[in-house]
Picture 1 (cartoon, rainbow, N blue to C red):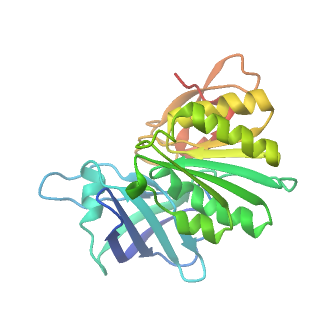
Picture 2: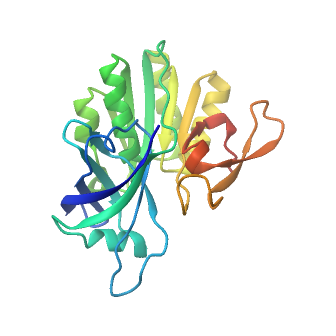
Picture 3: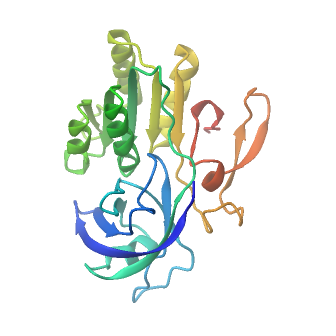
Length: 267
């Protein structure tokens, strides 16, 4: 897919809670043609504290080619996102994209499970909506530290997903409990594919279940990047080959950010 180095115009950039902001920008119809799971590489403005040297990769939260608008949900942590958080309506900045390979739905899929935590939910919301448009049933397990930090419920509700909320504060997000929840969902209606983003702990669980139950799975990886187009090799990781017998090097920006969950090496 072709990518564009666009001059984005900020339409809004508001706090969602004490950690996350929701930014809406205008880039034009061509750049706003995005597949679920793809990302943009954003040029972050300077602040009084520092000047970010590299762009920051950010998954698309929502994109509308008809209006030319793209939305991002991001956690303000570090000098890059601190710079983004200062942007006001009508200010501009450069963003490169859409980049990478997105999620893959199969024509035979009838029921998928998406499981995300924190900003990982921003990556999964467009997938849930796309699946719903294809008449695929979606079960969404949303994870966070506490109720106040659960986000994007309305997006999954609009996709008519069956929503299950799990949080740390009441231990419902404990891995053994989430494992039991998934097995129960699968028992009620077989799951054709797992999709996840935002937590290595969750990714490892879904990898184990995918191998045990014979369910296809994909994970959108979060990784530090520089160029975003595969030239600098800053985001290279080691993953398993298809035979699961040796490790091979892959670029998250170009070969991913979405990978077969069976290929990932979880420590």
